[in-house]
Length: 141
Image (cartoon, rainbow, N blue to C red; front, side):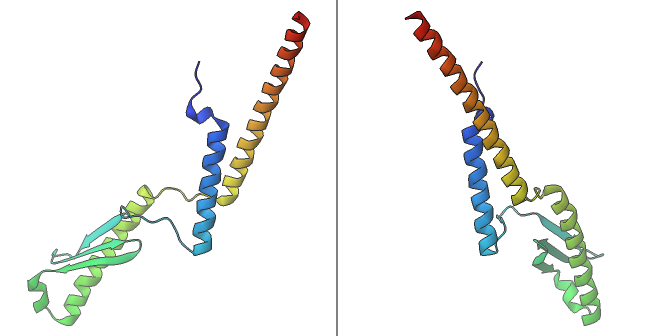
């Protein structure tokens, strides 16, 4: 039976250390993991003449139908507010579904210790087996 890569304690330990180093660097730099595939929320006004797009809790695009520009400032403001609020609500729903859980560095350290202890137990068993094999080989000589 061959061992899967998930069973390799050294590989798991290396990966955990790399992830921990990334988290520490991000925390030090005040960064969070971001990429271009961030969730986007889209909302429109009641008449669909204003369309808003939000990402990461911010408005990233606002599209206005030309007919909307003929409205009074109050009406235009109401349409924009409705579209932006709808986009933010849509984003909140998507973000809850698509955002991976944030890794807790303390939990990662605990998992790293567990992997390290598991590796040490495995090495102790290997060492014990080798010592027994060595005794048997010497007894046959």
